[in-house]
Length: 208
Image 1 (tube, rainbow, N blue to C red):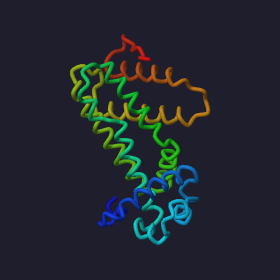
Image 2 (cartoon, helix red, strand yellow):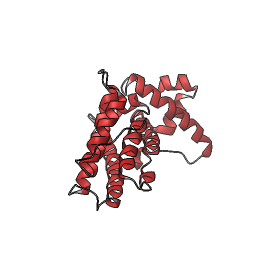
Image 3 (cartoon, rainbow, N blue to C red):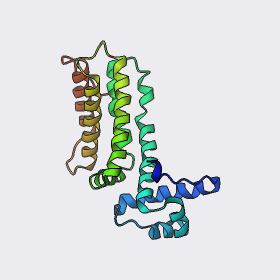
């Protein structure tokens, strides 16, 4: 990842990079990776193309920095550290579902471009995998706090399952043309994860 992080040391350049990153995410989201150009970003930001090349090097480097910029926002919404403080099992599951919904509603079209680019670029896919592994590690540490109450045998498998089912289900629901009621989806995810992790005899109620 470091070879693509060409952030200049000069503090005066930082506002330029942030502006390009914010517009870059919008352009990649709307037009996709291959149809986004530095020239177009230059016109929108009123920043010279040469300065954009100097700050980022090439389009792939820009996309990767946009990805890193986006991931920071995603982590903020997932708010994993706060989950360590929760003392109630049902509230824990509710927080997992709610936080994932908040996170993956952030720039969903850019998330789609991340998924698409990771399928054609192995180097970028490794960066996505690093992020996925980091989130799963957070989940596994949270689950260890509840080890005595867990029904599952392998915490690492459980963390993979929790992350995968939340990410894939919520992402698909956001992108799907099907009319899926979010309240109903949340209820099913609550019950699925609660029963999988803790109990098969008690369902959760979804708070309004």
